Length: 223
Image (cartoon, rainbow, N blue to C red; front, top):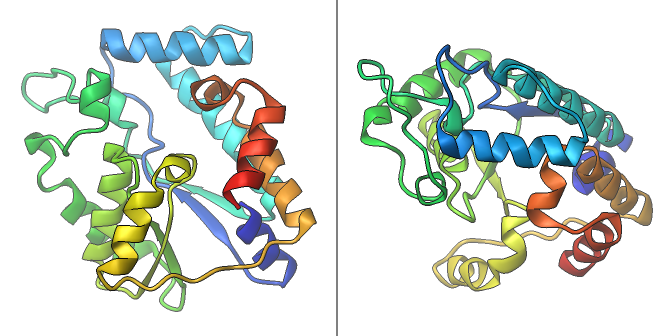
């Protein structure tokens, strides 16, 4: 978010694409998804009646974060992994913490290819794409990286924060295997925009931090 703010201040046209931002399919949620909803609702101090409302509230958080960054949000219609189900059986594909950070489900073996084709149609031809590395192994980050690589476009990669906060060894291993690392300077104003953007995601804060002071301290430490 700090780098996005710096680029927008330089007059760059930056957009932030949320790939898995679609409405959940009809039907009941898994117990795991219900548990996550309860955590998110506690963070927001409110309750919603449907999972579609949960998605709408998270998009509203993201729009406010993008305002702090000076970026344009873009939302695709693939549902978050916790909502996705098998086409024929309607069983939930990612119904546990282990599945959330495991491999992509075999039922989605062609999803990244379909998404690649869609991205090739949607992405501006002169855009520089900045893609998640997939640190932390979240399945939706894995999907996004595979789809971006499938476009054949030139990519830069970013370290997925906050998972990157504990992935120093993994980042070092990438550099030792030949990956290049580039450092981007961020001003104090950019750092503040970063903290403000993170803080807008109130439904997600309790998963990673105890409060705003810890958000600020950890981002400062990481940067």
